[in-house]
Image 1 (cartoon, rainbow, N blue to C red):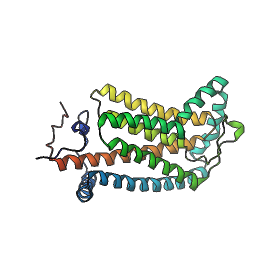
Image 2: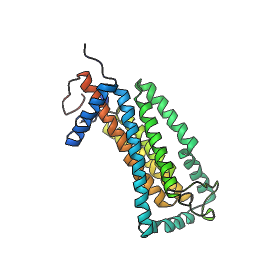
Image 3: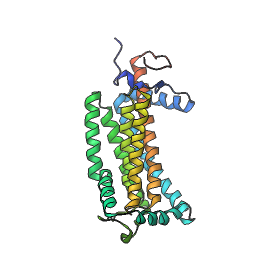
Image 4: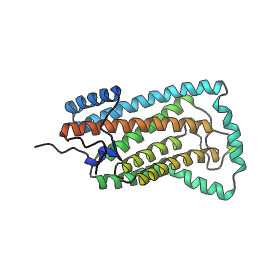
Length: 273
């Protein structure tokens, strides 16, 4: 009897794109490597170990970004935007705006983002009846946290002066912005898991746009409130996008191996009916 794949069949497709089809030699190489690891360890164990290895690479990427960041700051590169943008943010503040933006930015904090991620995870896990949302969410959030901690330890940058910030004040190192990094990773993973189930291109576009808008607004809120310099947010967006792409790629490898092991025949390139 042909074993059932551990993931729903429709997860293979986003619209007409087959996520288990690799067109480049590098992609095919990693697919073969993941297949070997799955045979030796089991598919979910291989997924967890690969994600853990990805988290280590993400931390190394953070260290590299820190070095590049320091070089840019020393040469007065993009950092010349920091003070002008902070000055511009101060001119746009008002008691009402400060209250509204503070309420929004709290969603990206340790408590707010944890609650949002837990709710999304509960719904996705129950709907999909699969461990994959839990594994991907924990891996994504864990990697994001490691990158934030590594960046703050390596750079130790001071936040904007309290005289330019809106209370309640924050005192941890400024680089990178944890709110910005975590929001783009968590919102991105939720959007990815939703897109796998959405048949309408318009719905998929709105889902991705909504996640991107949330992440961008969260980053800009940190600059508006004077809790971060713009470059803290800019690098957080870059690191978060890179880590999100890594997690999604690893899940694609997992899907590829799952359907090869199940002996599932490939559908036409046009995708699911």
